[in-house]
Length: 418
Image (cartoon, rainbow, N blue to C red; front, side, top):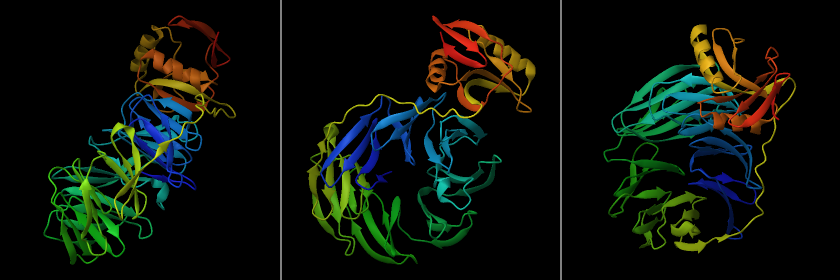
């Protein structure tokens, strides 16, 4: 994913957020302590790591919010007001304003990723997720408000996919060809062809189908317009009309489909981000970053610019009568909730059972007017938990407690350090 701003381009790679100024051939970076699993760009850049989700101001390259996570999530997307994280068996919805837990949805186990941000759909409460395997692909529609799965459809060998907002349809590449799907997952049109396709993209009135040996141009009816072998050994990646692997980079002329340049990958380019059909951002060895002129294949190295490192600033989102709470678990039976609650109390934390939501007994600690203090206790407890943000609970008794050598005071429903 590439974020385009007025004067810069934002990308994330490994554990770095890069702010790239193409005009001045320079970049700045923000380094996280963890590798970035996935990210989206909205009001801020939301970066998903193994243990946290971060909100980062891309203009200042400053972390402005963070929430610890109790488990690994593989993908992240967004609605208008929420952040959606997807694991192998669960979808979690967070409040975008403060990254606090809102809801969870169980799903059939699988490696599901979002097909499009719900914020880009007419029905903004629907989430389309896809899992791709060699022989079987699955697409699901999830209603985030109900919450429930409202449709599932199977396909054979899904290789790649796109969403086209103007046409309001999905286009998927499978082992049997290209299929147009409407938002109900009904096939509106199919294009069959007799050669293997591993990836594809749209170029003007054509589709460009690629595989490990060639690039093929077909029209929207499936007629082959042109074909160009690209005989390179080993795995091949493509960024629009640039093919590359660890040994070579090949540039293809879009109109004639002929090779216009081939050169050795001396800078060990391992990832490319297409800016347009004339430029690519290239990441190479030793943390080098380049801009490639895709007409001539020239690489211009970007200069790293230092910036004043700002301390982490957590944006407080306390408003009205709501506070942060740590939720350690939720049970449908009171006796199980009581047993678990007592086990957490034995660790020195004055947790309580919240039964305000009908049908569930939730084990909570709080409230907190300071989010950083809630984060600290979440991480120090070592217990899987979620950060919640809800109306102040008034029936909690005042107390003073010691946890891992630190004294805390719970007074008037709010926990503070002594």
